[in-house]
Image (tube, rainbow, N blue to C red):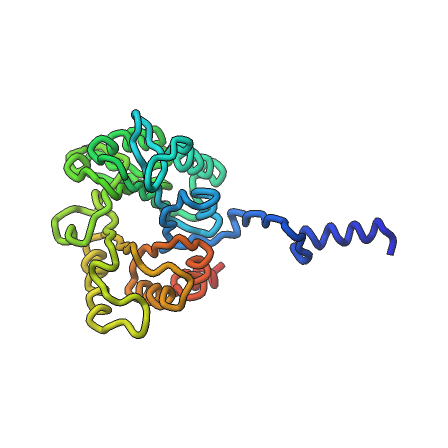
Amino acid sequence: MPFARVLVLLTALLCTGLVAVPGAVAAPPHQSSVQPLERAHAHNDYEHDRPLLDALDHGFTSAEADVWLVDGELYIGHDGPDLDRTLRETYLEPLAQRLRENGGSVYPRWDASFRLLIDVKSAGAAAWPVIDSQLAAYPQLVTAYRQGRVHERAVTAVISGNRDLAAMRAATTRFSFYDGRLPDLGAGIPASLMPLVSDNWTKYFTWRGVGPMPAAEREKLRAIVAQAHAAGHDVRFWATPDAALPNREALWRELVAADVDVLNTDDLAGLQRFLLAEDPAEQGIAAAA
């Protein structure tokens, strides 16, 4: 075969992915080919190689950014502030750019709201006004509460960690919402302030995915979800097993069966595979597509 034809054939095979190049880095999937996963939350998202972008490439619809207030600026970091990374540059600007690329949506043809969970590590009373002020600079991007009404946009910011409930409750206009805890259920906090209730799995359940889930714990989980949903709150648990072992997926199955809204993970690809294979809601979307 002439060399020119060999070269053309090899180029075509490389473009289709039928021939792998050792050491080559796979290109990220095109946005339109990624299925948004309604339950997928990127815990400690900023620790991935490409914060936010890796989560979006795996179809995640929720991501967590830990923030510290230092000299009037919000820096990303878990154990302390990384002074080279800000909330604005790492999350708000990329999300705004994504919105421009997709005509107003985080994912093409997806009309739900992406959850940006902002976990405040420094003092909440000082940090929240700065967070809300930065969010207010993106009125076309960020869901707002004004005079008793929620105006949903492509991104909804939820404040976790060190929160200032009194200040948030008193605000007549705000661009962020409160991440509650299980004791907040039934406390009269409306979904317009507290759209999400999160808590530590190990505080309420002994089961870690090994063997069958005790019937009493399964009933307790479903009662929590039913109470939250009746009041308009989504439910999330952290501190669930996250190592790639059978007990992790066993626990995820129980969470999906109980209709828990948000599944927490550091393993983006692992949760993506699980939800596409085992979440009936996601399978239904894939079949319709």
